[in-house]
Length: 241
Image (cartoon, rainbow, N blue to C red; front, side, top):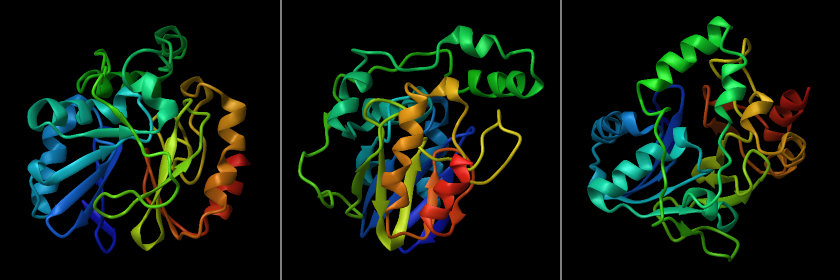
């Protein structure tokens, strides 16, 4: 993991990222990658002197399988609580489905980038299915959560119905998939939107970036791609262009 600010650590998995907020002996994770990467998440925690038993909760930006597979495994092994926005709860619990349709991916499988990505993610759980009936809704009140690192939810739907970013200590923003800086299917790096097939509502995904642009922050920690340093408003301008 790399340290983005005091107590904020950024880890990578198979084309998906996770964040650890360390507050004393306790940890909050923001997303936890694919199910097949859970041991990698645990190893990254060990590298910063923490155990999976120290994780007080996993905050989910959204319930796509590449963000919640590891969360489900942590709950299965250690009883780790999982929280997401109330508007994402039905998705997290498996009551609705907002994952990209397989046929849409198959339609682009002739591209070398897509084939390599499919090969990679199939190894870590892309062909599986995750339901988390134990997922809990974030408190309705605004402001910092009563969790290690005191993350602040920033509701930014579009990619999924309840997609939520988190403002973290030191002006770091966990943007999830609302705003990324790279993806195996993209031929560019830097602030951008994911390919439209991954989003439930492409137009709303673009509009909701206003919530990120307004934040007083200096580092973006996306769900895919490398951290980006700068004004979130500049990042949003680049993504929209």
